[in-house]
Length: 327
Ligand code: ATP
Ligand code: MG
Image (cartoon, rainbow, N blue to C red; front, side, top):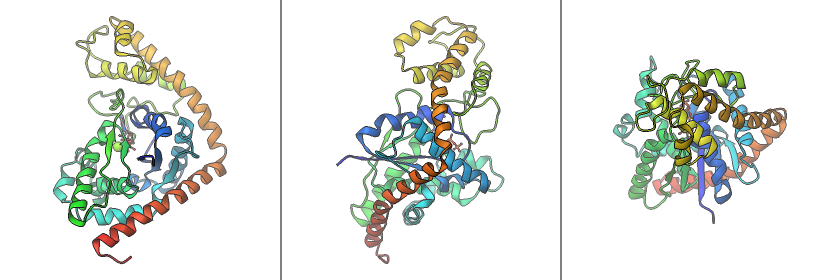
């Protein structure tokens, strides 16, 4: 039997090249070797307020982006988190074995809570729901970007704690990070990771941005005070641009050094922009084709949820039995 893989994206904004290089590209790469479930985690998105109509539209958009990237709905299941109620049910049971202190330590909680006037409890519980998503399917591998590594560690702690309290129940999942592009930084501020929920105009390249806009965003990216690329001394902005080029082009470290050492930043940016556009243009064409058939898209999502629901329901049944709850 193939090891199961689970991963997801929040429909909380426009998917960007960080989401692609950190996660989506890796999903497509490992898809043939595993039994994969790729989720649109809408219950996670509502941990901060989302406009209902915009959220509904984003869910369909993200499903189409998964397909455009090369997720094959025959081989992998694409599903919406809230279509399978077991996610929320297991999250409650796991909440009851998770110390609050573990959650308060999470970097993402501290960063996102700091931006809210009033902090919803969902923001604190976020990693428990994420643990439930993964453990519900007994996933062995979770391909994510580097920012989610801490939540994966927490997932393992929760799984181990449950197993020690109630007997061996859950697979303890491993984390899979890409070698290059695991943490793409903001183009306006290379000390912050690129995020969907960040608002600055020059912050991110979205997967659906037009070529002109991509050029503009990359040409305006923050670099440093040196005139040209020096791999020994380059600041985070220059390193970020080099990483983006390398991740899209799959260039080796040695070839990167040969190609870019001594290059002026303006020329570096031009080359990065053209590399990104060359990859995103065919991707956007596929996307436009897919969204033109909403009936097909709805069918993919319905089928995905129907395929995975029995796995999820069986886990909840087992957990209830272990905990002494009604089955
Ligand atoms: P939000 O700001 O709403 O949290 P996000 O950009 O962080 O949005 P998520 O939906 O939270 O996106 O994450 C989806 C996937 O993309 C996760 O696997 C995450 O690790 C990965 N990811 C997010 N940002 C980056 C980034 N800057 N570089 C690499 N991977 C990333
Ligand atoms: Mg995030």
